[in-house]
Length: 344
Image 1 (cartoon, one colour):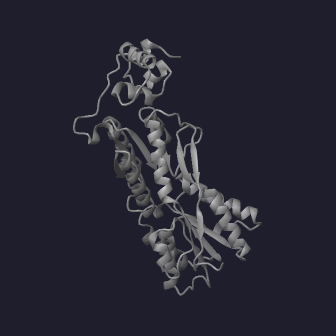
Image 2 (cartoon, helix red, strand yellow):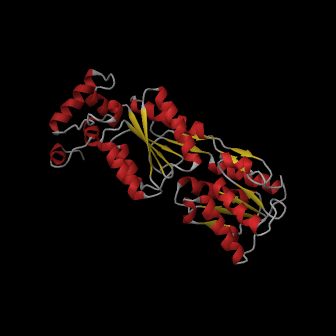
Image 3 (cartoon, rainbow, N blue to C red):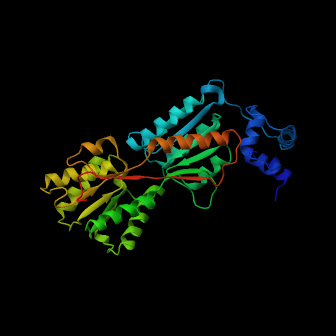
C-alpha cells in the first residue's frame, strides 16, 4: 500500500510520484521538464506530490546533446547488417522529428547493456529503444518506470511495454510448408543459442512447421550454439567444419537464423565438395546485402528492417508525447525470398 512516510525514507523516483498521483511517468516528466502542455489540475497534483515526498529532480547536464531531444538505441551488435539497417531507419525518423539518436552496441554482454542504461537515464535521455539483446527483464522494466521505452525485435511476457517485432513464427511455418511441398523431408536448423526472443520464435515456428506438415523432428539436425552470436560467418564455417570432420549425418536442407551463418556454412560445404542445392540446401534469414551474391544466391527470409526501425521510433515518440501505448505490439510481416540455394 502507498505510504508517504515510507517513500520519504528512501530515494524517491518518478515511479514513486506516479504511484502517488496515479499518472504516468511520461506525464510527470513533462510537468517537471516543461516539455508538453499538461492540465493545471494534473500539474498541481504532481507538484504537490513532488514537494510532499521531497523528490529531487535531476535535470539533464548542460552538455547533454539536444537538451532532452535525444533518444538512445541499444543493440547487441552494431556490425550486424540487420541491426545497422534498423538503426539507420531510427536515425532518419529521429532527425525528421528534430531528435538526436545515440546508438550503442553492447557486444551481446548484459553487463555492458546495464551500464549503458544507467548512464542514459542519469543523463536525462528522452526515451530508450532496446533492439534484440539479452538484458534481464528487471532492468528493462526498471528503465520503463523512469523513461519511455520501446522494444524492437523482442518482447517481454506478462508486461505492457510496447514492442515492434517480425512475424518470426509465421514466416518459419510458411517456409517449412514450402520446403515440404517441394519434397524436402529431412530438415535441420542452425542458430545462435535460444536466449533471445527472436531466436526462440524462429525455433518455435520451425517446430510448428515440422508438425503441421507431418514431418519428423530430427534432433540430430538441430544445432543452437552461443558462438554464433558474433563473427557469424567465421563461426558458422567452424561449426560446419566440425560437423563434417565428425562425419555427422546431414539433412536435406538446413535452415539458419542468419544469412551470415548460412554463408559460413556454405563455405565449409563447398570446401568439402558438397554441391548446393544438389547435395544439400541452405536457407538464411534477414536478406542482407550478401545474400543475393553468394554462390549459389541464397534463399532467405527478408525482414522489413526499415519498417522495424521507423515503427520503433514512432511508438517511442507517441510515448514521449504522453500518449498511452502500453500493451501495444506491432507485428511486421516477413517475406520468403526464393533464390538458388534450395530446390524450389
